[in-house]
Amino acid sequence: MRKEISLIIPTYNRLSVLPFTLASLEAQDLKRSLFEVLVIDDGSTDGTREFLRQYARNTSLAFGFCCQYHEGAAAARNQGLLHCSGEWVLFLDADIQLEKDVVRRHWLHHKSGPQRHHCWMGAIRPSPGLDRWQGYRWDEFALPNGGPGVRELAWSDYRTPNTSMAVADLKACGWFDSAFPVAEDAELAFRLHQRGLRFWYDETIRAYHHHPCSLEQHLAKGEEYGRAAVLWSAKHPSDAAGLALRTGVYSPQLPLRRKAKHLLKVLLVNRWTVPALKSAAVWMHGKKMAWSNKAVTQVYRYHVRRTFARHKSRAALCLRRNGFLHVFTQLPLESVSGMDHYRVGFESADRVLVKSS
Image 1 (cartoon, one colour):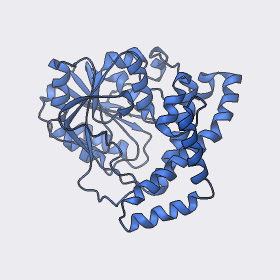
Image 2 (cartoon, rainbow, N blue to C red; image 1 turned 180 degrees about the vertical axis):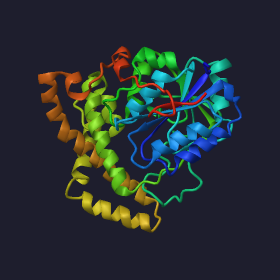
Image 3 (tube, rainbow, N blue to C red; image 1 turned 45 degrees about the vertical axis):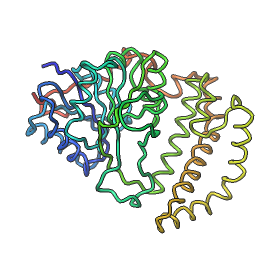
Image 4 (cartoon, rainbow, N blue to C red; image 1 turned 90 degrees about the vertical axis):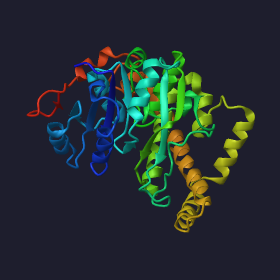
């Protein structure tokens, strides 16, 4: 039976929190005949597949799941988009728990709101179960403070969890680019923005994020963003200056004042000073000092810049020899048709892929 809104959740080794996310979906106050839940297991090794198979047999939700090799969140979300039946899609993560009215509020915005043909974003707060000093990445989904109520945001503020839009808009722009290990949501938002989609934020649609992160995990993520910046600069060369302003990497297209600021950062935060800055960040974090956030941010940005600089020249050489698609992805960009051979299907409980009625 066709649903009106589809909830898509990619997961990778998040079994410790996924049941709580699904429990928050069980508590939603929207009629269950109007929405479906699709979970895509991105090659987890923690028993997620067995859990999902059992959950599919017992839940009263319209629920489905599939298992794929570890290909990343973008590929997992694309699998969900291939199989969803809703006119609209609501993206979640496996560590996001919703207040009981979230799905209904997204549905209402698209069903009858004045901006129903655009993207809607809800608020994401740190989980009440987390201590502020438990990890090194606190409130990562925070948005610029613009007061309560509804307001329009820039495309660069987009992040995937607790956001909804029409499936037709995603299909028209080519869905997520699975070549991106991270920042696939921002890259999608950039293409949607180019097609005229606007991004609206309702602060009262609230979800909670439970993902403590160690310093090493946080810095490793910075390196992934550096590699993603290389892909971005190759795919969207006209956005080179914007990319540099958002990520802190260097671009010849930066204005002179920004170039001077970048040079100052390189002189102050480099391979000789980062070890001391990192140690200071850990010490301040242990003392619960607010300045630790600034120190961690500088070290994180250094990892983004270093990885970008290290890989950009190598990538440029490969691009000249082989072309973007050959080097970075096996799927045609800006095209959904090229993904059809990756279609897996949600079938019976006796196979890897399951969909409940």
